[in-house]
Image (cartoon, rainbow, N blue to C red; front, side, top):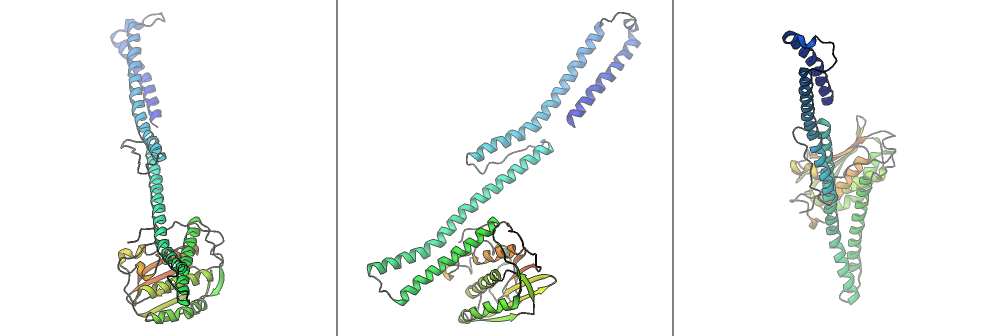
Length: 360
């Protein structure tokens, strides 16, 4: 558009200026035009020089402004690309206030890409540190116990072997949770969707885990209206087990209510407790991997900070969502909802992973 305007104004100046020039010549020096010679007169030569210089100056001025508006953001992007390639992920391009729309969008897109690249790199470093931290404790315990058994410090006994088995089971659970999250991030967490009795699946899990809940002073209360749901029953049992373990470790003694059903074309699975609850500001982060609320989520309780992250990943793989909201019982309610239909999921779903945060 700018080059079109330059061409238009130059053409208008040539045509209009020529008419104006000859009009003035006919008024003030008509004898100059009364000649049969085709030779240029001095006034005509002077006029051609003036108009040429003016046109070239105007075109050069417009071209310089256009070049600056194009080259400044492009040079900034090129420089930042070199800095990013050299490892400076904090480099950001500057478009300037006078950049063209296309150049401004290029700068914005590059900065957005650089932001995402920097975030992914930071998350990778956080994940590596968090995983190393979670693995260090059980591996250290196993190494110490086995070294003690090998050196004769500990007597081989059923109690010693059970302690070792407990640590191995914890490592197995951590590895499986990491595998589930990795599959979710890469888009390969496949769901085997079948029609199932959602209430019956819930009863199977609660029957197995009821003893552990009673030992923690908690009582399971079921709310299971008849419902035929389309889901992956194995993954739903995994979700419910993670939610019950979470309530057993962190909720106060009391009622833990489990609701499962179908409402308005959506399947619902909800686990509620009586407290202490999660602050509203932290409710959005409970599904982040390796995150714990400072007051209630500690490593002393035996958690890895992956349980609810796995819950969120399975919910997304069902094309649904998991939310943390206040419970009518006074504590926290973790609720999963997903569409109820035979074709809920036929291909892998790639979903962004929650941003891992280093544990306190």
